[in-house]
Length: 454
Image 1 (cartoon, rainbow, N blue to C red):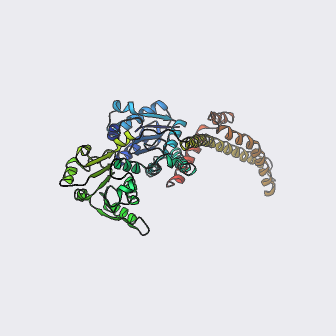
Image 2 (image 1 turned 30 degrees about the horizontal axis):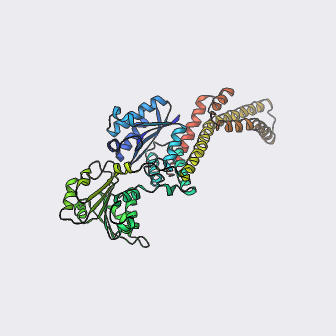
Image 3 (image 1 turned 135 degrees about the vertical axis):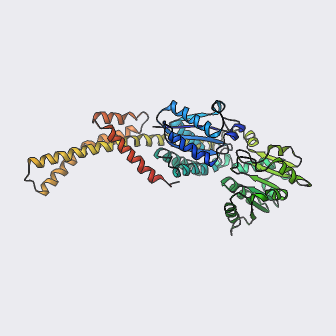
């Protein structure tokens, strides 16, 4: 089996296509179930953010896997396959590993170096574990991606190369407004945050640190909004005033707010043009709107209204032209390359383990058979003699197998080492079904151990 990723992102597709192809939580779950139901795939995971949708799978056939995963993405996103295909990218085996590790480090983000992607990778793995679609390969891959991302942020200055999408969005929002700094602009303002997920929580925390006077949280699930308010107002925190309201109160709060950040999972508009126009009636101060949702939460027509400034994912994409590569980015790329090589070696070495286990099991059966035959020919052996003979035969077999099994594991970890498992099975005439049964048991055991490790 081999790793395959098929996806699209802000680098390959216009925001209009990404917006239409976005997947709800239910759609992601159905996509994963259908991925495993497809013959070429044995495992599956979906990484879906505001600017990327990627389907990872463990497949046994490359071309069939690409065709199947592309079709599934089209079916569940609602964008026709013919329209979607030109925007899809495909990565296979080591290139797929390299891609995810780069994503985890923020190298492929709209804002290079942003760290929020680590939380989104963690969530993607958690969903795969919960739905039992992530097996040993994807568990290992995503766990390692998280470690690589954390290593990049701790060992380099990649954080200096970029910032969170929220911070970037706020900077674009206040560009040209009174005050040249977000903190200067934010002081004393009232903020409305629509949604209570990870992006909305980050937005609320960023606004609180910037010094807004009040934050209002509106969310369809009241408990999540209340919890976010508790976090914002807990002792020793930012000291910002915060309260939660129901979604039906958004219109009233919009009229009082100075800045609105919206990031929900809604499939339709949360703030219509009519709602924004009503909020601006009789208003003398400007209204700043930051839409971080995909598909968009705020009607694009709002940006044409007097006194309204709207920044959304599309305008952020246009503003995020790549900066010249800094030394920190180059250093992270070096980390990614090293980690990809190490991951590939570990996976190749693990591939031969079931064959080695089957070989040692066969050797143990040979020893047991020969000892039983000896007992039949020498019935007068006492327990001590029998134990000594058995131990001697085992030591001889272990010594004969030690060097070749250790060496074959080393060789299997090198590029092109996958054929050593086949050679070992052929040389010792191992039953392929025995090796396969060991592999299945190892995979199932790995699923149990990895489940919940996020």
